[in-house]
Image (cartoon, rainbow, N blue to C red; front, side, top):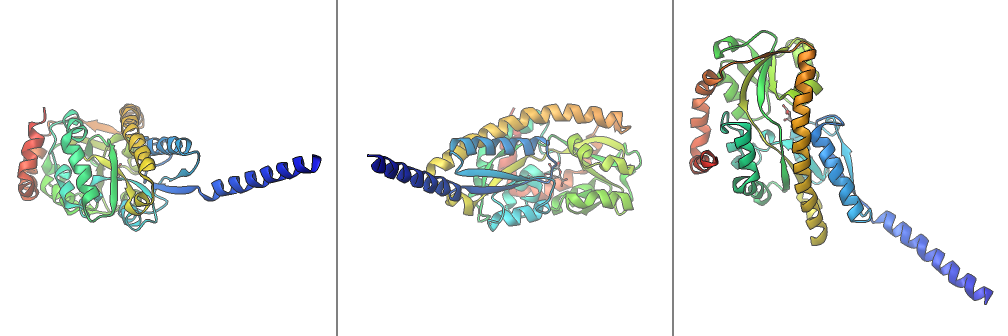
Length: 327
Ligand code: GTR
């Protein structure tokens, strides 16, 4: 009796240990990358997606976040995601343009009338179609959802109020010829480089300015280099995506993919709420740190970029009509 009981107990124990180690072995780590620091809305939203996925799959999946650009520039992050070395990446649509040209329609200067307009577009049919275009392209990325990055404005070491003031100024743009053309059209000299290189370039005078939204301007510390004149051009409203490597996606069961989709939708909504709060917080912090927000009528910048819209927009004429029609 005793022997039998201890035999059963031993079997149970062995089974439990085997089960536990099986579970441990079966855990798949999904590496997630972001150029932003811990606490940034995009980083927090993906971390929370990961926590939900881990709980819902009893730990079969775990998302490990690599923030702050430690896995490389956004261009490198995209490449690594394509080959499956990174499983989840959150990047600006700016760097997706060279990989999936269709998305460049959202990367055009002043293509959206306002932030509210941009949100309506990405939240609606056009936004869903664009995510599908990325997923169905040969890029080997599964676009999971959108993230907000508000509007981008120019910051320089001397005040800029009109396009002529940008003359002779080298302004860093993201790596996409469309953005270099945009800056050149606005009057400056567009120089493309990765986000992680901008601080040094500003400090050493390789560039005289850059352009971004308030949360990025604050968390990147760019404003501490003397680039403290922040001209409210709002010339770009580039949405961001988070995407999974197709290689990792194809290894997931249909049920697990459905979970990822569900939590992705929630991550998109959560990031937006965090975003609005962070824009308000960082705007206040920038002002307190002495950054001068130069309020302007941006029509001159809009007019100056008309040739860029003409050059790049021709191929998306129908889509642009549909974007304009979103009220
Ligand atoms: C930020 C954006 C990043 C990156 C960066 C940049 O606003 O969130 O994804 O695009 O700008 O300027 O490179």
